Length: 342
Ligand code: PHE
Image (cartoon, helix red, strand yellow):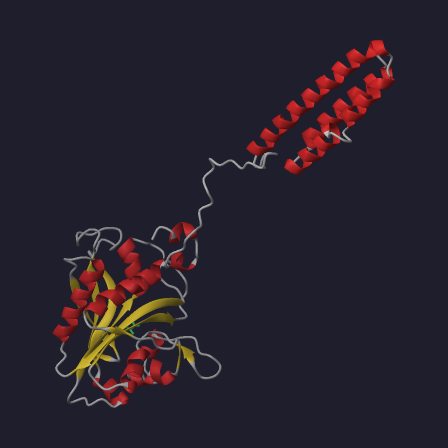
């Protein structure tokens, strides 16, 4: 056999195998196939053509060698195709792995605070309270003065807030919406006002400078403290489960008189004392009271004819309690590992 043809065959084998092992995708493989095995201009075809220049006695052995190379290359091609298919590329036949699971589309859902607000709206909606909204940027009159919190009153301190340069402020509670509702309609009133509020509190596990409240307001003839108690008891039973008990502790808010801080019995230990309720059996969830006649005067309601009650629920606090969450910061960190649990 001619030494030079033999060398050309071996050279073609080495180059073809190198090209195959560096092939990364079906297109690379196809290039190698065309270059070596292509019917019209493939290198193996050239080698076969060169046979005719060999002395007759060498032709058979050289032909057998070229055919063996052809078979080896075909085998190596399909082996490499299979390898690429397994490691993520698709095979030369274009076949993806049909047994692989499809790409699931990720579907989001409501934030746990939005879900809690929806639950509050449902429960109080069933008791006849319509949801309304108030602006987050408020006037001093709505946030303070009309709520019987005059400029020099120490109660302003606990509702101190972010003032904007134009004289407006970020509301420090949802109570200003009471004023807006009463300014815009005559009694009877039965509304809830869910929304965001702001206070320059230092951030820790139970404080954040921005959180949510849900205000409740009912005004009519003959509304009494027992109506407040009945509505809140039914509302909290709806939100926290039948048998939830309420405890009213005397308190002070300038816009209600009398005022109360309202605690609910711990749903985890049923009042026996546990980590969530700090062993007390009770958790403070809201402020409430009968509307102070001074507020009715500020909005022009007849204080002889009408009475009413108001309450303000801390929404994060309610959600933390309902779900046993121990840090308010989790609501705002947008960590899906937390959010997807609810
Ligand atoms: N606005 C009060 C607060 O933010 C809560 C409250 C609302 C109290 C309505 C009484 C009546 O603390």
